[in-house]
Amino acid sequence: MSELTDAKRRIVERLKRVESATAPVLAEEFGLTDTAVRQHLDALELGGLVERTPGPSSGRGRPPVHWRLTPAAADLFPDRHAELAVDFIRAIRSTLGDEALDHVLAARGAQQLAAYRTKLPADSSVPVRVRRLAELRTAEGYLAEAVADGDATVLVEHHCPVGDAARSCTDLCRHELQLFRSALGDDVTVERTQHVLAGDARCAYRISPSR
Image (cartoon, rainbow, N blue to C red):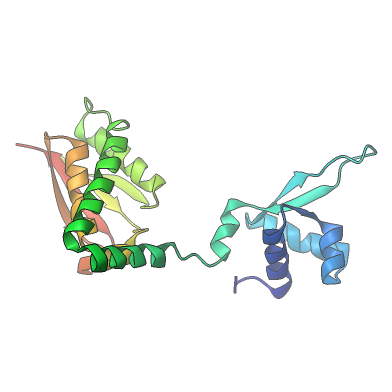
């Protein structure tokens, strides 16, 4: 939260601790004027970090406006998902061995494959399948897109939300390549042409009809 002023940071931290709060209540807690707090809240709202929500009615007039954090505000707080994933990988490898870790990755891949197959139109053209796969991957945080390249379509992933885990366990990337090949069908060829772990800025897969 270093990009926030001290007052905005305190407001955000307070709203994290409660379901919602009014501007007057926040002003009293922080020794600020109602106007100052409302200005901070308006700025936070403009940034998509807080939102207004009607409070309980007192029976007279309009109910007071309550403020609460939006889901986007979660990014302002520490997140140890990446560290936790790496810790799990190391724990499985050290206690059960590489073979057990590979079984875990295979089980995860099977779950992903089952989910992808319900959403990828198997009877559609290769470009349509790749575009749909890009949408699925984007929803998972990969910022993916499908780019035409001659008779092929390139799946480009501009972000890797599991980068730390992949660096700790490169088999994640191997299983990802297998996942794409299985999900897209036997009538396509999938080749990785760019790889973040190899020093590239992004991961890319050239997908073309099998000859």
